[in-house]
Length: 399
Ligand code: LMR
Image (cartoon, rainbow, N blue to C red; front, side, top):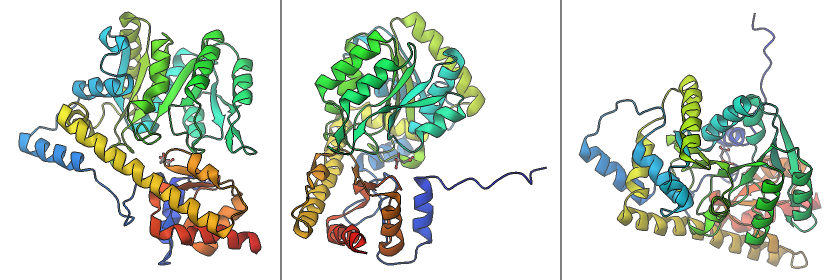
């Protein structure tokens, strides 16, 4: 009966890690997945996470089920991290927050909610966007469409195109916005541009759906990186937001994040939360506890939070330092080319403009693993390997 099942293609991002593992070359570099490595290219467990785990072990906590909506202390810390502890939306109980499975699981529960309660609404995603957005919305039964975002000429934001596309979207559509550190381009709107995006959302009654997976990695400051959702909340705009702790707390495999709807009143938030719970119950029942406890220990305690901020700055600082060295190496090699985009892009990635064939060449000849859209994860690079990387594409252009 299952003879007709075809082989699925490898995942555009996690499939790169699978191919990397199979490569036996000593030169190999995994610049595919957005996962932070140390300068020694080793995985990094934050000190605050280790500390939180020690405290948790000492407290001898049990493994009983969490409520469907997750750990209360985690949910409180998570909305406060996003909107600030003094946010009126939090004080007035206007947020429906459900602990969920990192960015992907949170987006998926949000998408399922949209499919159920906003039937016929399409989700507008940026062109390009993170390799999993299309799957998530399509599999949840939400049609996706694209809006202009990136201008390859300027290697910057095509703001005019973006606004025009959003203005042309039918009223009541969903618009997926990267809260900060746009993946894969590393190009974010300015505060003034966010204001105009908010204007269009209000005028066209669009539901903004923020994907906040990199809070802390754009500027190095957790607060500054939350500018966009904080601004929308201040304007009284209703929106959805998926948050992930995979990157900023390095809790990749713990699958810890949240889906929230910021609404106009508490009564609406209660109703929405009841439906989010209904959806989650049928998918995974209730969320995992370990990562949620770590988050509540770190984000919910003043002393640990301060230490986390320091470690966050260290991670984002290391990526910035790598950007600079890569820029310097490329400049030495080809001084007549403008490499400034490498320094201007923010977050974990550099969007190189390499074609799929050039990306293949990088992998096949140089053992540099990257996604086919030309994205390099600088979080997986160190200073010592920048020269090797800089040399690779230039010899490609000579072959
Ligand atoms: C990435 O874009 O590399 C990360 O968000 C990891 C993932 O789940 O794709």
